[in-house]
Image (cartoon, rainbow, N blue to C red; front, side, top):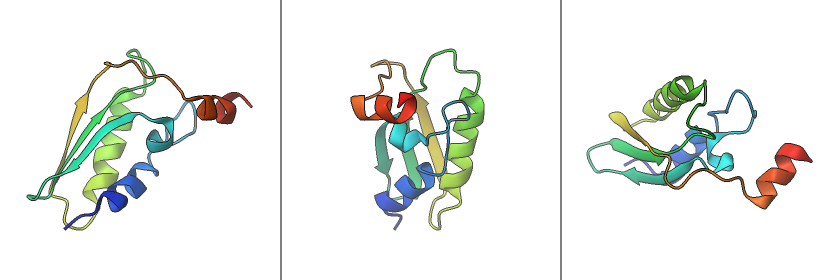
Length: 96
């Protein structure tokens, strides 16, 4: 069975093209579930509802997660509730 750690590692390889930080570190992933049937469910947001790279980022996540042995498909639910807010630690990383 696929482990949560494997999925997280794949997500850490999906970088926001504008910010150049991965989706996991950015806190864009709100929920991650591994279903017994090999389906990975991800509830996520984008840095802004108008993110021009949203589709590209979602496709990158699906592609990288589906490469994990045992993954049959990836379901992504996009939400903007609650709106994304960078943590103080993340602000330090982004803005020095």
